[in-house]
Image 1 (spheres, rainbow, N blue to C red):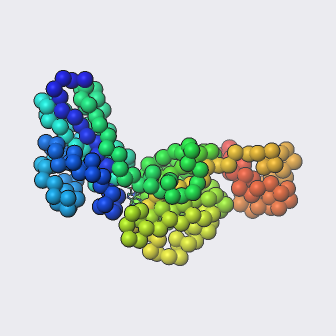
Image 2: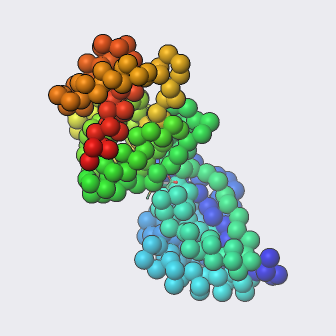
Image 3: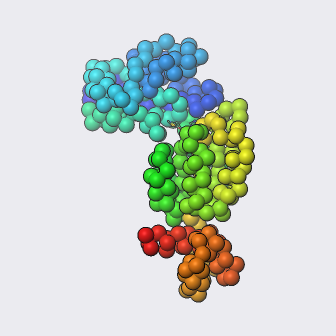
Length: 285
Ligand code: SAM
């Protein structure tokens, strides 16, 4: 540790409801010499609300690498500093990684102040397995990249989560439906901690129609929490006969129909057959 250096506090701020700023966060924001904020004008509203008059400086994706060196110098000279983003926990799909890394390399103490984080809030209320989970950040904005990423997650056994921008929600859900099939459970967590908070869980096919038919659901900030691929159990196992039937049907039918028909004939879960059919057809190129 650098002797006499200040501390870098990584401070979570609210994701909607201002009451979610912790008393400890407020104390630190008031006492540090400088607050490095993703967008100083955006954070000014929060700071004004709480009567925090500490000086702020911009530290965002475009200047973070260069800015970090100067901030590190000040901390090495003894100044305490806080890092905040526009909302929630810094570094979680937000800037801060370079600053934290450089601070640690310089021997500066980095102290996290936990608080609001959209993905953890969504997971805590989703009702999907939460003992192990994966966070994928934002999916690629372009359709091809997005589908590829979803395809890569199709067999992920843990619950997985993504952040999505409202104007891409419908496209993203349509791609999930095409790749994961209609049976996969999904939870849409919208406008968390705000007036129109909505947490809706359903099978993917049902949720897509619900969102499509209610444009209000396509607005605001959201997290998608997706059920992991259930592990095959003895009675869910596909078995060679069911696989043979699926192969025959895939010779003449599209993936979805082949899987549905094979499920009817064999009694194996449609979802499992659908995933297997997708894998088989993907390998065919
Ligand atoms: N650092 C933030 C955190 O700790 O959650 C995330 C920042 S990221 C740039 C913004 C994304 O987080 C939004 O597009 C949305 O997916 C999610 N998000 C932020 N606030 C939210 C809220 N109140 N309800 C639902 N999702 C939210």
